[in-house]
Amino acid sequence: ELTGVVIPNSVERIGNSAFFGCKNLTSVELPKELKVIGEYAFYGCKGLTSIVIPDSVTEIGQGAFMCCDSLKTITLPASITKMGISQFFYCYALETIYVPKGMVDFYRKLLVDDTESFLGTLVPQILPLP
Image (cartoon, rainbow, N blue to C red; front, side, top):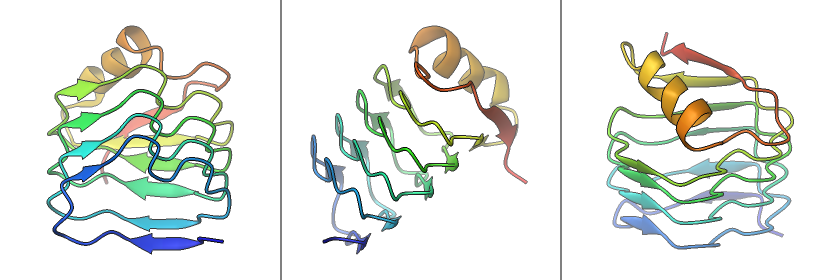
C-alpha cells in the first residue's frame, strides 16, 4: 500500500480522486508548480496528519481532504482564488489551519461562512503562519 508520495515538480494538477481511499498514505510532498487540487483528491487518506499547500495553488476542489481522519494541520497559501465546498468534512483531528499573515479573516469567511467546510468537524483555529 502507498504510504508516501513525492509528486514531481512538472505536475500542475492533481486529478479528481487521485489518491481517493489511500488510507495508509502518511506523507505527501506537493510540487512547487502545482495549480489545482481536484475534487476528492485526498478523500479518505486516513493516515495523513499534515499537508502544506504550495504558494502556486489557485484552486482546491470540493471535498479534496474529506474524511482525512488524522489530519491535524494544513497550511494554505495566499494564492487560492477558488475553493469548493466540504473540503474538511469529517476531519475529526483537524486542529489548526495556517494561513499567510493578514489573511486570517479572509480564510475564516471563506472556510466557515462561504464553503461549509467543516461538517462533522469542530471548526479549527485559523492562525497566521509563524
